[in-house]
Amino acid sequence: MVERSWQRADPVEPLSPDEVADLLGGSGLTAVRCEPIAEGLANANYRLEDADGGRWLLRRYRRDPASLGLETTLLRKMAGRIPVSTVRFADPARGVVVLEFLPGRTLQSVLAEGNPDEARAAAPTIGTTLAEIAAHPYGSAGLLDANGLVADAWPSVYDGLSGFLEHGSTQPTALGRAGAGRLDRVRRCWLAHEAALRAATAFPCLSHGDFKPANLLIHEGKLTGVLDWEFAHAGTWLMDAGQLLRYLGPLRAVFAQAVEQARRRRGLPVPDAWEALARLVDTASLVDFLGRPETGERQTADVLTLLDESLALLERA
Image (cartoon, rainbow, N blue to C red; front, side, top):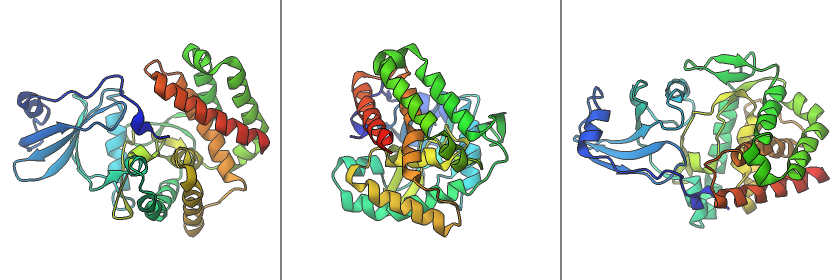
């Protein structure tokens, strides 16, 4: 089960040459080719080739144009530490950014095409990257501003995440799709594991916030790029781990081992039963997805299946 089978609510439309020229105004680039990229569920992405043969990613922020500042700040901050795109040009006023086009295919595509060996080979570099992201500490948890600083602090990581869950579970759309009984089970699981989760998230760190296979590029058995930083915040690495492991099926154990080994090498703590805690944190993301009006029937069915699987395992833990 992967998001590749999901359809966008608003497909990316091709751009005319005049539209491309207008978007690139001030970038110094002259496009000779611009093609929509199908992957992605929110922003509009285009594969761009310039007159000098350079290859770029042109992104138009449609979901939240204000997130452009945060994403470009973090890409520049993380450059040299993990595989990320170089920022060639950014225009916050128009919600447009031009990024280095990185080699590879998404882990989501590799999994969907049935290439487990290629995915397995990339697990160590993905685990190392997740650990490197989490090695960036914050003094408090919360949402980040365009400069990558906490602008809306939470009392704690746990309080922020449980608030995120409560907000999602009280949305009429989520209630209608999941049912009150299923959402009550999610809340009970959080209460049952509250002490362990509070302890495991006591020290806030950078969280990518959308560390799923669709946002991880791999090439020749290695991670080559971490995409889409618009949901990054000061929180917990357990969210990223939960999103990564969510769709991996038989490869879940391989990637979990890679994540744990990378954290130990980096000198980062590895809580007992961390996989269960990552799965628990991920339920908040799943509930949030159910509450979005643009979520389609196929997506809803897949998310409910994932949520039921997680609840069954967490209730036995």
